[in-house]
Image (cartoon, rainbow, N blue to C red; front, side, top):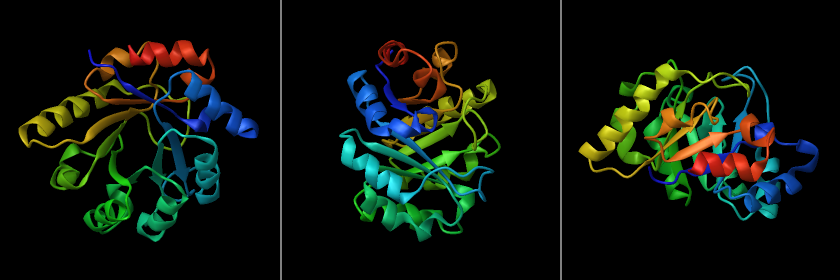
Length: 213
């Protein structure tokens, strides 16, 4: 099995000590920093926004993997890229013009991603896969950390790998939601693993190392 990229989700970090947390996960072997942005409309929770992304960029050399769970993301794309987002991932249901938004992300110099919520069939994003650098498969309902892994979503990961090969595309497949030592083997076809509570509630070096191997 190829080594995975690991993107700790700062939703589970100590927000009073974010700089310290970022340095700790980098030292422990993290590859990216996963940043969940929620607006209280598209998902029933509110988290962080552009100023925090800008602050994170100043104190971490790791790529910022920013997941926008917001309505009409086109309104904020430019600001998030300017703030330092390296990957910017949107939901296909959040905009009337997903292709245009994905192209704009790339034109601004960031990498574009699409998300599959548990209830979103893979068919909804198939026509857009030539525009993306990343596909994020949610194995929980987006909105809150600490939920249990939905095993019925694993089939989407497998399908995305097959489509990538058949169409000669090169997007990364990312998984987020309930990823830990018990569920990591179900994610063997993914390239990037997002984990929040599993990493931040344990020994960072040990948990990240286990996910990578």
